[in-house]
Image (cartoon, rainbow, N blue to C red; front, top):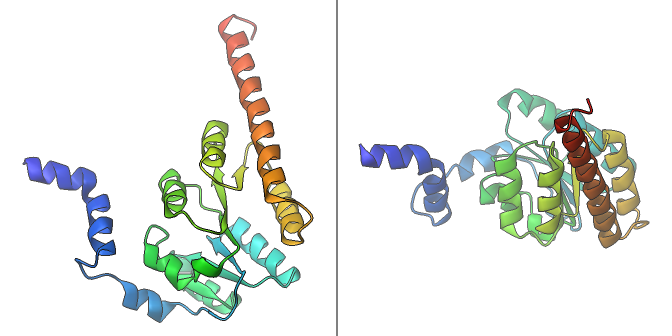
Length: 208
């Protein structure tokens, strides 16, 4: 019973740890079979997720003639990605091999359009040399991600998708220094968090 409880709670972490050490068989063959990556393109952008925002950012990369690789793991999107993207990887973002397949070592920017705390934490733990853009719906989490090294965090309630595209365009064109972008975001999220605290304090005092 104790073993069953532990494996239920920590099974995912145990599996990934054993897989990374080569102690259990991985799904690398499936990833290789379903992916198509041009490994001759250094300084590329890796886009995680091919939903609405991922498609828009992919188009921005095309418009700016920026080499890019799309990572997706939804089987329902397999044919769409294969037909619309020149370079793509079908694999789990939580698996290190997925990123190796996307040639993350030579990437200049990794953009996650996935709203998932475990995924964001995992990407931060990899220690990519590339700058990292994440997504969340919480200003506190955004500040945490920035403090841990993220370049930019998209928060849907604060920053619209259009603003993300605008910022990334200036970044691609070297019109905005990464540290400047990070500093601007920190200040924006601090102001937002402060406003929320003032609002909550006022509501508790019976102002609303």
